[in-house]
Every structure is written in structure tokens, then in C-alpha cells.
Length: 342
Ligand SMILES: Cc1cc2nc3c(=O)[nH]c(=O)nc-3n(C[C@H](O)[C@H](O)[C@H](O)COP(=O)(O)OP(=O)(O)OC[C@H]3O[C@@H](n4cnc5c(N)ncnc54)[C@H](O)[C@@H]3O)c2cc1C
Image (cartoon, rainbow, N blue to C red; front, top):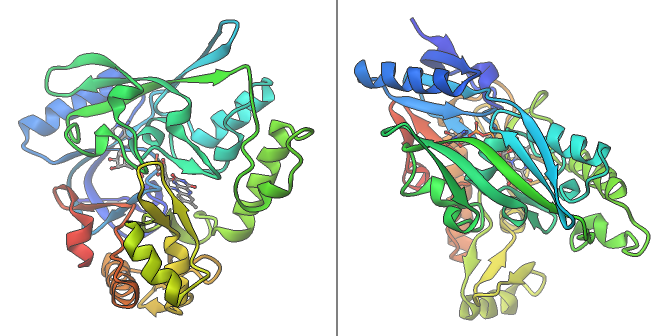
């Protein structure tokens, strides 16, 4: 018999797992892993499931990280907040602001847990998780050794970290420590935040504006199943942007420090007239082309076929091949999302 995963991931798709364990302690995570190893069962740790697509029944144990605890410390320059990986990210943002600690306001309303925030280095409105990361505590499942990784050791990049690569399946994040400076400056580079006055604005104003923007353009996963941005924003070389600008002078692009150029994936999809495009029960969200939604009882295959069509249309038009931001999980664990939709 299998158990429904529907309420444990935000796509809200009907998929099951052999076993689901809610782990409130580190010991519970380790015990579940040991049992899975002995039974030769696949094993995966999940937060709120807001960045995963289950492709089929998971033939193993899904452990929901519910290890909590928030501890504050400070020195003359900064606050240090040690947070259990199982705490909710948005609740942490609210709590810090309530305590008069600014810094996380641009990252308001991002679904998911604090531990998972490190995995893809969550970011929004010009701010990324890595900007505040002081250290990450992990457990090495194979040695059961606790390790503290510095921010540099986590090798954070755009929606990327060491946890997505060589350390995948080896480390479980159990806590993070954020360092929030006492010399706060507002970050007002994107969207409606540009209209705020940097000399008078406070962190709570930014928080409210970010919440307002997000609520007006992103679907609420408790109402419409989705995982936020389905694709990553692609990076291209300067030769390619010249070709694009000749044909589409309005293409939004963002030069990076390393010379690459970031392109808005949502704009590319929109130019292919794909907003509202449907495959089975899945659709491209009509207000934001980067978001694929479970409109009506979508199956994993509906989402995969839709993502395949979006990738091909954008690729054929712009010679830019989008890659999913979301983690694809098959019966045995995480698999290569690009291969699945190619
Ligand atoms: C409406 C909406 C808006 C969003 N907006 C943004 C945004 O603005 N910016 C952004 O960056 N993201 C955004 N996201 C994506 C998502 O919220 C983030 O990626 C979030 O950090 C995922 O957290 P989670 O707890 O749901 O992780 P999950 O989806 O549960 O897990 C994600 C991956 O991390 C692994 N994992 C989870 N916990 C651990 C752990 N403790 N140790 C090791 N591995 C672990 C899982 O196995 C999985 O591979 C959005 C999603 C939605 C639905």
C-alpha cells in the first residue's frame, strides 16, 4: 500500500510514496535513513515540496524535515539567527521584522522551509539567500557526522549550491545561521520597489510591497497547484544578445559580473504566445508565463509534456534552451529534469 503525497507538495498532483515520515528530530531523520538503507529503499528529504515535481509513485521513504528552533544572538555590527531547517521561511521573515531586524524583507512570501532555502539559494527582487548566509549545519548521512559549512564552502550561485551537485543525497541540512547587518540598506532595484524612496523607506514598507506584488502576480499554491518559476532564467553570451536585440529590441537582459547575460525566461515564453497554453490539466499561468500550473487534475505527464512544448517553442524561436528550476523526482529519487523534458 502507498500513501498520498498530495498535501506534501505544492503542485497538488496525485502521486504516492511507499512511506512518509515527519521527522521532528535529527535522530528521527537518521533512523529513517538507516531503515531505508537496510531495506534498500530510496530515501528523500522534503521541505514543503514547493520546488519538486514527482513523476510517479516514489518507491521509498519521504522524510519531511520538521526540525525546528530559532535562536538569536548579536554583536555590535549584526544579528546572528540560528534556525532549524524545518522552520517556515516566510514566518522567519515576519518574525525578524517584528523584532526590528531588517534584511529579509525582499524574500517575503517565498514558500518552503528554511533548510531548503539554501539548496537553490532562493532569491527575489535583487536579494539572495547567500547574502545573509553565515553557516549551514549538515549531517553526513553516511558517516553521521555533523559538519558546519561556511557560506563560501556552500558554493552558492544563481539558484545553485553545492547541495545540488556533489553533496546531493549525502548531506541533509539541519540548521542555517543568518547574519543580518545592523547597517541595513534597502534594495530597491526591481519591479514596483523602484518607486519607493530609499531615504525614507523602512523594511516593513518593502515587505508589504513585495507581498502585494507577489500576491497580485503569482498563483497561491493552496488554490492553484504550482511550484513558482518552473524554469531558470537562462544565461547567454554577448554575441547572442546582439543577435536578439537586432530582432527584439525590447528583450529584458541583465549583464552579469562574469560577462554572461541573464535573460528573463518569462519574457521568452510570453513572446511565443504561450500564456494560457494547456496540455491536459496543466497550463502556462495566464498572469506569469514562467509559472506552470496544475489547472485541473493535471498528471505528471501533463506537466512534463507542457514543459517539453515550452522548451521547444522557446528553443526554436530564440535558440535558447530553458532548463527547469524545479527538482524532478522519479520512483527512485531525483533525476535529470532537462533529459526528461528534452
Ligand atoms: C508560488 C511560489 C513562488 C516561489 N517563488 C520563489 C522565488 O521568488 N524565489 C525562489 O528562489 N524560489 C521560489 N519558489 C520556489 C520554492 O519556494 C523554493 O525553492 C523553496 O526554497 C523550496 O522550499 P521547500 O521547503 O518547499 O523545498 P522542497 O521543494 O521540499 O525541496 C526542494 C529540494 O531540496 C531538497 N531538500 C529539502 N530539504 C532539504 C534538507 N533539509 N536537506 C537536504 N535537501 C533538502 C529536496 O529533496 C528537493 O530536492 C517559489 C515557489 C512557489 C510555489
